[in-house]
Amino acid sequence: MKEGKTVVDYSMQNKKAWEYNAYDFWMKQIGAPSELAKQCKENPVKKLRYSAYFDEYQGVKVGNICGSCGKKAISLALLGADVTVFDISEDNKRYALEAAQAAGIHIDYEVCDVLEINMGKYKNYFDVVFMEGGILHYFHDIDEFMQIMYSLLKPDGKMICSDFHPFTKISDCLNLEQATMSYFSKDVFEGEMAHARFFEDEIRNKMPKCLYRKYTVSEIINAVIDSGFTLKRFDEHPAWTNDTVPGEFTLVADKG
Image (cartoon, rainbow, N blue to C red):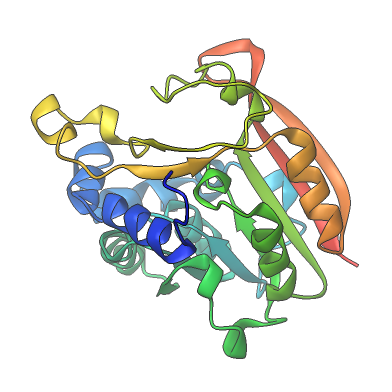
């Protein structure tokens, strides 16, 4: 990354990437929004995947951070939660809201940079903030990110953060086709967005790049603790391509 690159610069670059053919990608990968609605309604707990980390759903206010096409938000809403998605992509919002309507439920969807969430409205608002699927590497100051998560929660609220395991810095064990590097590297690097590899080369070569910063386990855990959270669990999960190495983790922390 060029010296002097600002948060606004990398945020706008990531936004361009995530709004390039995103709606068409979900149509290709999942099907019409009605198909996602059908899948979620058939088994919302299975579609959610993280039910073991939720104590309850009914009436629980959940902030779904970088909620993408809405498959987790819709599943949570079907289970009774009051869900607000925060995501940078208008295309993601379009697909998610069409799927929610097809599922017969309501979700709120705020298109914004997560670092610029309206705290006049959402400070101390949520019972749970929830994120999954590899989002931390889009934020280049993990301490700032965790401080925002802390601010969004009510007293005694809970953060559920599931993400790609830092082991993926040194091994492309999830087949994401991203560069590997020193485990302790603090470099910001340019790379393809997550779903670029699913497009034919003609489109793939035109897609805007994202700017990533990958973290170590200690950087993630210390950012959680330093933000005021009480760390409750840190579970490691095998890579979906190789169950002998870590591919993901799930972290649970309380606002104490």
